[in-house]
Image (tube, rainbow, N blue to C red; front, side, top):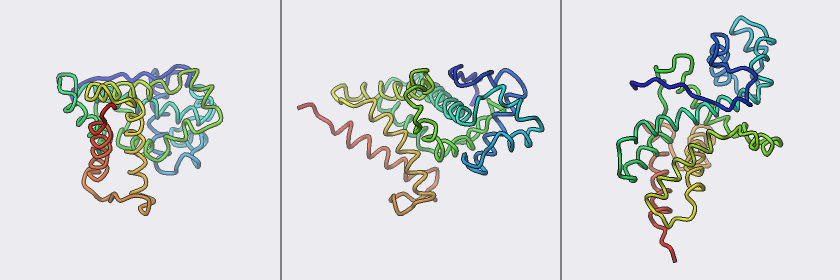
Length: 229
């Protein structure tokens, strides 16, 4: 892609903006690689410090704990995805064409975006698929939501919901459908990779085509099929 993007996350998530320094960018870049390799449960700031040749104390200057780091990574991903969708639909007036682009971006296999050197979006996408629900399935979710931790996810869902509403103004659940499409894309990808008996989708489908077909079916059968009574 030929654009430059500076993704913003809620400043309450971090103690110091990791995008503001070389060390901060190294923390983000290395944490993505380690979480992808080991999983979030086995990821620690100690292991991260070894990889970036720094100290745990230096990492704690940026993030209070690894939970907030995960919230940051997922929040960054949602903001980046919204930017990509906005960029690709900017000159398209037909909401059905916009929706097809949205489904493609939500469900396709993500490739690294060279416009942002310190983040591998392809690797981050794998983390979002397997780990993102851990960012909000916590006892602290209500307090964190009030602080705006999940504002980027909310903004993305609102953007998708607007397109849904443009397609069928009578459809009463546009935000629900938007979040359902996002979560379904990741859930079905995860199931096809690790729990294949919970899905009909084959992970070996090129470009995650099985997930894309299901997302289109979910959308068309529900939104296009809805008529106000």
